[in-house]
Image (cartoon, rainbow, N blue to C red):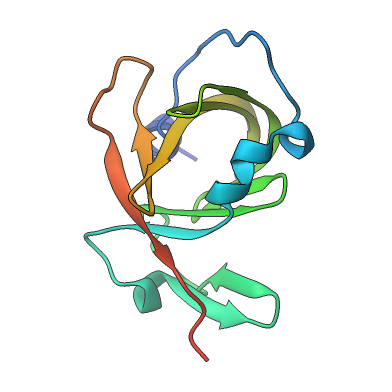
Length: 143
């Protein structure tokens, strides 16, 4: 895997190095519940990236590794190119800082992601100073 690919995964997750205080585990963070589910940036359609399964949503086979998609389930956050274990969550109601351990086909890397929820959408931020973020819409199972 090329370093540029890892950088694009990091950008997709909206990460940067950041020190967290007052950290709760993912299981202890009630504010993480609103982020559970399949999310996709507005530039794509849900059916292009996700498929409905009995237990929820999953990425389609052969999905573009760079698709702007996030799947959050319990203590797991996944993108088409990485699977991450949520180690901790901190932050105020407006913005959450999520510390992750992410695995790709080549490496395991600690990552920090910044997200918020408003108007029924998820917003991903590139770093703690990003005030605009990228908007992701929730994808619902199709039956």
